[in-house]
Image (cartoon, rainbow, N blue to C red; front, side, top):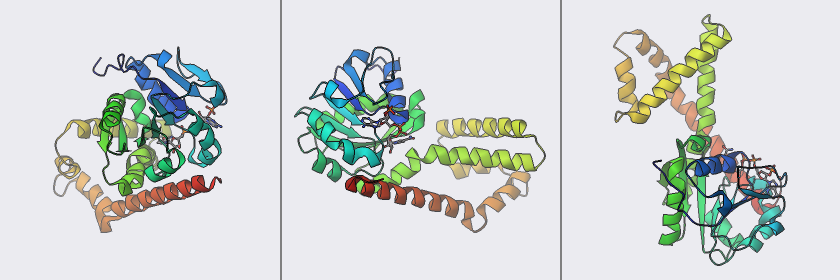
Length: 277
Ligand SMILES: NC(=O)c1ccc[n+]([C@@H]2O[C@H](COP(=O)([O-])OP(=O)(O)OC[C@H]3O[C@@H](n4cnc5c(N)ncnc54)[C@H](OP(=O)(O)O)[C@@H]3O)[C@@H](O)[C@H]2O)c1
């Protein structure tokens, strides 16, 4: 096992363990994290993994864990903040995966924690091939090191020193997989319009983009250089690239997409501060 968490040895509370926190937990367990060291709080009480304790209400969880990760929807934070604060002790490192929630917000709500970090994972962390953005820890090196160890098995980890870029990171890497899936679907739709049936078009689009993604992940070349390897002057690929590149329209579309996601992140955080939907 490249990443071994069997000696991680910290008590972890997952406050909310749905799609995203559940994906992280799935990978951690796969890497040997002791399930007995984890408590998940979720109203449904549904299992999150073999041997992991699940409680439906926070009063049933043990206080002062080493790490408490908040994994509820941002709009819910105001409602559950007091219950979270009641669990936090002087040794607790608080992690928030909530879109838009700043370190200042966390400091205001959870002043007693040992350290506070923003964590922005994306869904592919489930297979260890995700991206995790990290910010905070307020100069606490031990907390930083512990969280770096915990996040390493999830995929590429990027520390963001300038927190003002964290919402942009969230748009790019947290939401990014969904944008990529739309691109796959657009390739599928385009293939269909050129005559393929839906299943064949999807199969070809998926296989093509998966192979290109695998190649770019391994290659030292830039995307421009890789595209140049596929396209020859005056050839078919170049004719297609000319359409995508005209007036930088693909870049404009993606920039607009990222801006919209970033703006919504800020709105959600504002709603979380006010405790509204
Ligand atoms: N989805 C993504 O790709 C992604 C990426 C990065 C960050 N995030 C962030 O992750 C967070 C969660 O998103 P998600 O997609 O994982 O949502 P989700 O699947 O709906 O999970 C939300 C979790 O919160 C729990 N919950 C609801 N009410 C609660 C309460 N009163 N007390 C304790 N727990 C409660 C839910 O419990 P039940 O399980 O019982 O319903 C569930 O486990 C969001 O803040 C989002 O910004 C998501």
